[in-house]
Every structure is written in structure tokens, then in C-alpha cells.
Image (cartoon, rainbow, N blue to C red; front, side, top):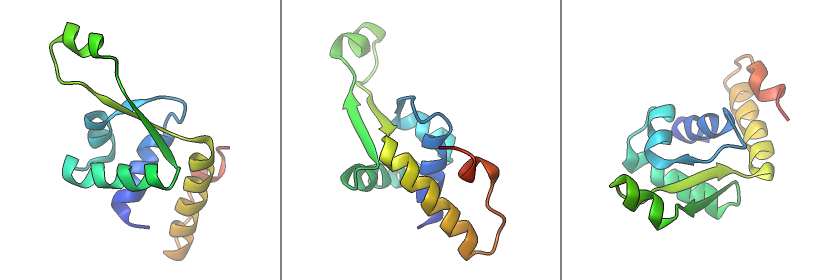
Length: 103
């Protein structure tokens, strides 16, 4: 698993029940949009992430482009934690408590 993918998963795992829009995830993961969106597409295809477009009334009222919101699925969160823990172990680093302590 690449470091950018881990960064996206960590950003989504900070509040797994919360939906986040793309540019918010860019900031949280510290990645440019050109890196983030292909990762989100792959995670969604794998079933780890789900997305939805916001209602048109919201962005029209606020005078901005329409946002797509992403949320990690329950299964995705579990698999992400396992994959991140495995990546830490393969680098022989101590697995952070937030990876193993969250379920």
C-alpha cells in the first residue's frame, strides 16, 4: 500500500462516520487533487469508500461548485486499519494505537 493511499485512509479514519468532500481530504491527507481523486476512485471501486453528490440547492445557494462527499464504509474502515497496521509492521515500525485501538 502506497504512502499516499495510507494518508487518504488515515484522513478518512479520523472520523469514519463523517462525510468529507474532496478538497477537505486534500488538506487532511496533504495531497494534491491529482493524487487524491484516483486513490478515492480505486477505494470506491474496492468497496472501502462510498460517495455522493451534494444536493444542487446547497451549492447554488452558496455560489460554489457542487461537492462530492466521501465516507469510508464500515468494512472499508476495518480493512483499512488492518492494511495500515500491516504496512507499519512490514517497515518494522510500532503500530500506532489509533490503528489497533479503533474498531
